[in-house]
Length: 460
Image (cartoon, rainbow, N blue to C red; front, side, top):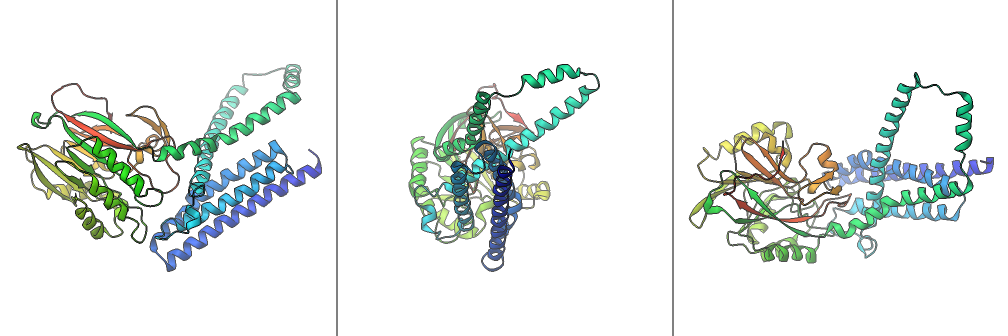
């Protein structure tokens, strides 16, 4: 590499460093100002910079360096890529800062622009995990090579011969460059393909076998909806489609497990209530509250009630279904995670001794399943994790997801202490990144009692 080329390379990388330092400082200062003078929830944006934006910038830097080595520091393609990258960075930053506004800037949500920030961030989010995985693999290989070094001694002649044979030809170098560009573009293609997937609502039918479920309730059809997250791209047409698909499945009862909202301001949520009012089921709609529902919970509960949805806030009620009693219970999301066991035990004990009646418990966060009192319900329904949000959907029941790899229940059926929990992939999503590889769902659960065969489930 000539001195001139080396200087151009350093200048190109330095310009990217300066840009990303400025981008992070801008977001940090803007979020800090919003925290002090607009809303305390902007504190989440302040925390988001080191947790989410700095890794994003790291991936941007690494990819830029890779493109410099492949294309050359003075190539027109690199210049266009760099300029486009800065434009997309700016759009992403503005969408992040205005995401919770009741009246966001119109041009940020115009066709062709509304998904720019999510696509851009998601692609580099994938790269962060790729780079982390490559770093771990490289470290393991180095350890293995050093462990074998004491018993592997090659003659200098053989090593030189091997080195000579491995010198790349011009054709091989060009091929490797093209392969490198394709590899760099793969996360962007994957992110782009997820735009349609994010709102590809799928009605998933499942039979759940509950050991103590009464035969009188065998075949009860439950529509389980969660994490609708009205606002942004989850607009009126999409909400009405969710309502139409739910009605088409002909459920006996509709159960919601929270996160109706998205921490926004204004009347952004009004289309939600229009859509919920369209859903019809013989035994009604019931709900608990999730962590995103506490900006104005009384207002939300009032609007839900007007739409035909009864919210169970740390209480239980009994329905009569063809003469067979069925208990429904709902728990508010608890933010005091380290006190979950004691708080849940106190709340559930306040309902009185468990009667010999089947009970379905609505609890937003599936992580709480291990802390619930034993046999406090026959079936627990949860959402919250969006099916893992990012990963590979292996089947209707299972996925390889980041959330699942962390040991958090992401989707499907789980068992513990005579209870079962079903975790839906949820309807909507919240914030960046958008859904990557994990489709949303409207879960239709047919509750069965007769067969002794048990469906496969994961123990937690």
